[in-house]
Amino acid sequence: MPAVIAPLPPGSYTLQIGDGTKAKITIKEDMQLARKWQNDLLVRLRKGDRFARYVASKYGLPATLIEPLLQDLLSDQFDSANRAAEILQESRELPASAGDVVRKAMAKQIDLVKARKDGKVHILTSLAYLAAKIGTDDQIDTVLMLVRSGIDRANSLGPLANFKQPRATRKLRSLIQDENEDVRIRSAQVLAGRKDEAALGVLLATAHDPKSQWRAYAVKSLVNYPNDPRVEPAIKSRLDDSDSFVRQSAELALRQLANQKKPEP
Figure 1 (cartoon, rainbow, N blue to C red):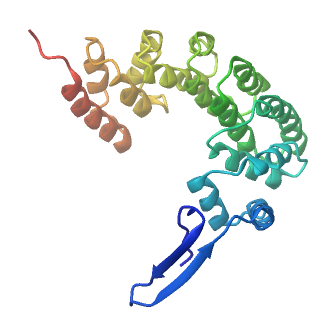
Figure 2 (figure 1 turned 30 degrees about the vertical axis):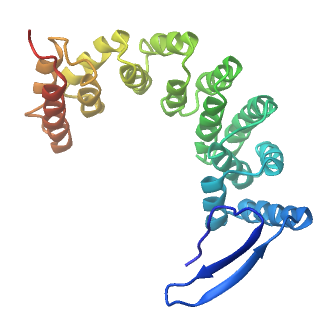
Figure 3 (figure 1 turned 120 degrees about the vertical axis):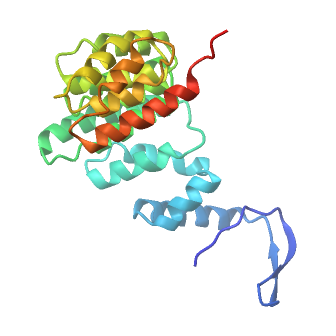
C-alpha cells in the first residue's frame, strides 16, 4: 500500500519495519531533485493520480505548482480545468493573483458549458467554491456571475454561504423571493445555517406543503430556529407524511429541536 510521511529535515535516519528490518536513509538539501519531484507531482496531478492528490491535500501544494494549476482553469478541456479546480480547493493558500484567474475561468467555463450542452456543469460549482475559498468582495461577483448565468442556479448558491460579507447575505435574502422553488429553498437553507430570520417564512411554508419536494429539507433547516413557536407544529405536520424519508426527517428534527430549546426560567 502506498504511504507517505511528513517531510523530514536534512539528516540521517534509521527506519524500522514491522518485522524488525532496519534501513538507513540520508536526507539532503537538493533543489534540483526537489524541482524534479515537484514537476513529477504536477504531471501526476494532471493525470488524476489519486495518491498524488492525497499527497497534495495532506501536505499542501508547493507554491511553484499553484500557478500552472491556476492556468489549467482556463483550459478548453473539461477534464483538465475541472481537475485543477478540485485540486486547488484543497490548497492551503492561494496567491493574490488567483482571484483574477478564477474570475476569468468562470466566465470562460460558463461559455464552454453553454456551448457543449453535455450536462457537465459541476466545474462551475467547483470554481464557485474556489472563489469562496479566496473569499474577497470581488469573488462574490464571481459566484454571482454563475447565479446570473441560469446554469444549475440552486447548486450555485452553496458557495455564497462561505462569504461573511453583508452583501452575500443581502443577495441570499433577495433570492428567497425567486420564482424558482429550488432557488428559494436553497437560499433559505443557506440563510438558516446562519439563523437568519429572513428564511423562516419560506421554510415554514415549505414544511406545511405536502406537495413540495423540499419539505424534508425544510424541516431539517427549521431546527435552526428552536425558540420560534411556529417551528414545532410545522415539523409535526410532516410526521404522517406519505414519504418515509420526510417522516424520518421530521422525527429526527423533533429530537434535535427538543435538545436545543432553551429551558424555561
